[in-house]
Amino acid sequence: MNRLAILGFLSLFISGNDVFFDEIQDMGNNEISINFNVDKVSLVRSYSLEDPSRIVMEVNQSSLPTEINVPYNYPIKKVRASQDGSLTRIVVDLYESVHWQNPTQTINTENIKLELKVKRNKNLNKSIRDIVVAIDAGHGGKYPGAVGPNNILEKDVTLLIAKELERTLRDTYGYRPVMIRDGDETLDLNNRYLDARKYGADIFVSIHADGFRLSSVKGASVFIWSDEASSTVARNLSKKQRQRIQADIKNLKPVDFDEDAARQTYPEMYKKKISESKILGTKILDQLKRDPFTKIHKKNVEYADFRVLKSIDIPSVLVESGFITNPEDAQRLKGKPGRRMIARSVFLGIHNYFKDKPKANTFMSIDPGYVTYKIQKGDVLSEIAIRFGVTVEEINTENKLNNKPIYPGQLIKINI
Ligand SMILES: [Zn+2]
Image 1: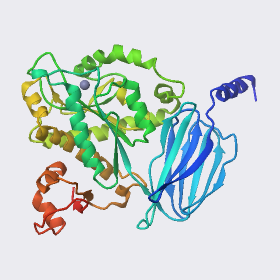
Image 2: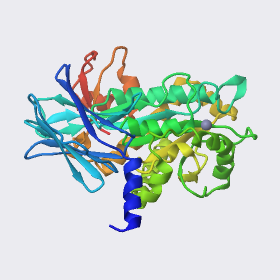
Image 3: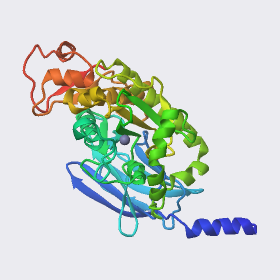
Image 4: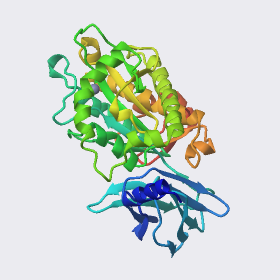
């Protein structure tokens, strides 16, 4: 080992990221939580394998100071780990297939809790997990965002659209929404994408409503991140956020994952994320174009320097649902039907994205050809039909409902 290598090794050691086993907890209701401690929020890749059944978590740029070899009760055989270069590979050996969740990372006072949840499910013949969608309602708290006629605030509109989208995803089998904010909270820009990683998000969708000095400018648009914002509009919008971004960068804690540094370390991963974001953005834009209520501002996905989209591996898009400074758009976004159409376009865009390229280990990889929706209290078929972009007749036929009343908890198939 030459001197430089020793120095490199030392710096790695000093800024080390050790993985320790913590505990396995029976959560009741057939759910088990497997916990580890790490020093920093990490880039974690996870997947499940069969024959024999197991779940693997790969923690990048970490080390394993002590052996992990923990037997447990059914359905978990054993939890073990090994070191592979700068990667720590944790394996959960299983007796049978389970429904698992992408690992989450929570900041504790002294370290990070890395948690994997598994749930027994006798109906599964291979392990699957939910697709995690991070929904970011733009602005909030002391940042109202753009202001429209009659003091309609962007932060309120974005939260209502986000909640509408959350509702559809929550009650649709195989999806799990996580809200970056679910109230009128002040969040800095870094926390938005950092939280998406902590939740184990597969994709990140930020919801906004534009503002412009000319009230005649209207319509929806979709953005993805780029070093060089490609359009004048995008450049103008980015400028407004630049100062706040500079302030926010300083807020990065030592335990946080540094996306900017990681972009240099994993250039291929980042390149893939940009192209995936483009595909996702295009799918959402295609749906917005079909929405009879919404006009389109830019017919192609635009590039902008929006810091919230900066994750190196989580495909990220920003949807401007319209110009709140335009009276027509403001009217549309003020009403539930208008907001519902935006949420529906985003949902259908997301669903089409996963339909085209099913993620391994998710319900989409089984290709069911339909989604399963769980009827909620107060649901009516006509509203469900609007939310999924189908007709009441189609739902009736698909589920042989024969116009019988629906009831909470009932599972219906929707062909989309
Ligand atoms: Zn905004």
